[in-house]
Image (cartoon, rainbow, N blue to C red):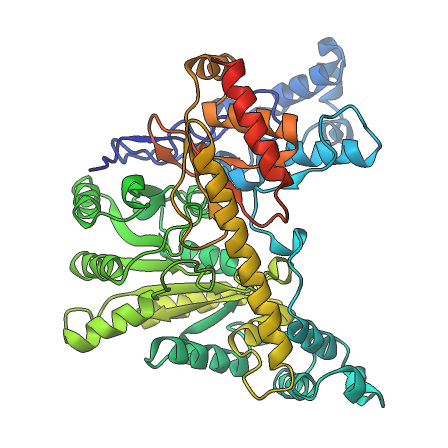
Length: 556
């Protein structure tokens, strides 16, 4: 049975790193669940004269000249900053996002060296296996999606005499429908999203789950990340607010909660059961948190899981919904990888909830559910277009009003991203002119992803001191790595987490950028890294295998 206290913190950053600041030593507060808000200390609220002295000293100005300069308003204004690392939002300083953290920054530096003709490095290219960014690798856009996007971006194409020779009829028809509903792509939409597109999403959900969906409960967003930020901003009221997050987890959640000054409550996934959930254990986390005075507001579930690639069974989902019904907390179901399924099938929280409400009248009627989907993943892979949505079920109407006010502050999500979301949920159907090519492209992407996942998984199985769960979904593998004591000692000497040390050496020796498990949270005493399997070919896999062998030899 996993215990809440057996979880190591995020990776530490050394003094030489170029990120803003080190993350908190124990970002999840796993033992006590206590959380003390960070506020600028009295020493950081400096007087004008002390600030001037510090700045003058840093600029090489003799300290004796400071008193003479403070008498001049112009001089004072020119020599101090209103916003410094000490006076900025302290919660942002504490937030950490490992996916684009130190290793990603170093990878960019190495790429720049290669672009500038540096031939001294032991590799010729950088492989960004640190982030699920399909089209940065070799995944091609879906033709129908881009055809319609081009037409709505430049409507004059619809009137071109050769339009029907360049574009299939169904793409022309869809563009006309969307333009009729939207107007200009350059105009604001409703803050909640274009009504026609919300209706398309509702129909998609109904077709997927077999239960009704309300367009009024659907909010378009600039990717699922934007929806998460809006939702957590709405529900978090300070350090007394607790939100359960899985460990390992996608660091969007811990970072957003840190910025919101809320309390992340970790629940460990069980690696021995394929990163599954243990209902009795999670129930104990809920009970302990409430007993410690935490106002438990929500539980985040990532299914399929980032970073582990695991998928929840219907029974696991039912157990989580039952816990929510009995303890009154919201479920945030991150389901952006719902089409990235390589073994078994996807089960949405919405479907299971509706089944429970049908079969057990009354018990589940007040369950609050927020479900997320995105155009960034799956066979679409349009990360840069920033499309996605959140469906809200069972949420208090007054809370909905406040969420609407929040999203209205940003006016609306990008309308082009909304259009892409409509295309994702309403693609060509059998009988449509574009359907054969659409199916061919989607099948090819799916086949390539599944083959790469299995290829990388099989490679990890053959590596000494490495174990990995079979990929079931998403775009990642999260292998466990055994790090020799000598390497751990060297990592400690360099003030690094051992798995971060391993990943940094991997990058420097092979050009392959992955993310250490400490960036996602992991059971204490274990080490992992997350890698995508988006990169084509097997050459980069051979680099990883060769590096690992030499790493073990070097530190044995």
